Length: 484
View 1 (tube, rainbow, N blue to C red):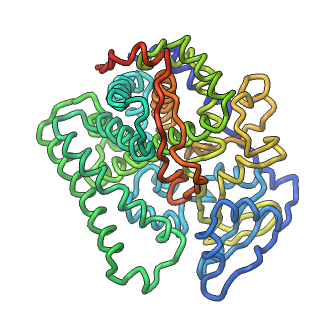
View 2: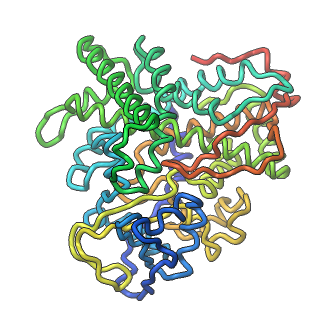
View 3: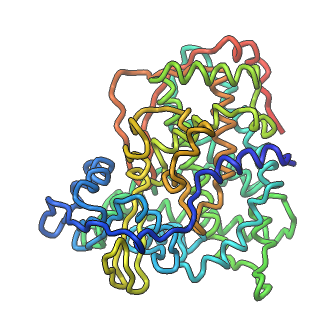
């Protein structure tokens, strides 16, 4: 079981970066503008697809609230940080919706991450018990085992594309936390096969409105549909097997099966279980694997950051596999994770749909208006983060972090729709980063510049790196520390 110290260490760190309820529109005025360069029929979609991060960070030059066109769909982008967070905070008026979420629902279903505000409270109440303090410690034992398996086979001089390697580890850990039964081996293999196919097709579907181009039976469309259908079938088979067995496996699915609506006493239906599992699979794999890959990319380019990380993990771990109990002592490691998530937030953009006429920044927004927020743009605001593109984990030292506005770090969202799995993700990322850095130094295998790939999540794409065993880690390497 997790101790209070480890859980509260993570909770304190996260609490410092979650926003409080404010409505800046009430006492300030903001400029509303229009982004230039829209093309007939396509709008700004070509710019968005070509370089999404440059596009979203450039919009603030045209106003605090800026209108863009994605195809024929007008979208208002909340560029000013207080307004962006007001959109995320006022869940009842700025509901999850719009083209992005409509597209995501086609894949994930109507789970806690994608559902409307009217359904959210019930769904969150049903899912929340699966992420209670005691359960995070139990899931950490699975993470320990999977991190041990990841590093056990590496050798000095070996070159590995770490992005898919971290993805496979995160997938196995997530699936084992979700389903601890004997079905896991088949499920992991199929999920690993299908997820990349689905992700490759997601950004275009999110950015381009429904059209004849999406209805053509291309090879890509057929592959996407087949992969999504296979994922759905795997989950349906697992849910059916769990219900038939009627056994508490002490995993996330068992917790979801045991949950009852506090008002009606009814459990989740099979369809609802499917939707929650899809949501948790996505969050548990993409966020973890992308953040780990970004962290080692940053370490390779920042020798002093790497030196300080190595000093901490050598002292705390001495080359062994990190456990949940180590987390409270890995303070620099966690600051690096926080800074990595600032520089490269996996969920880099989100949309909301206005449910009733309202005002934002002193400007009228009619019901049905689509509004966009970019977490990436918020995290790179030079007025909050000096040298915003520089990796500086010490931004998050307590004395410095206290000067950063609480609405300036939103890697897991904010308000009542904040990601339920933030502690799960932070635990796995911290344990994996500390363990790997304790044993290995990773360097890019080529001098080719890294091209950021903002798809559904912000990932580095292919990232081949060459391993060199470190003295502290090499001394411990024969003991693979298989975990429990």
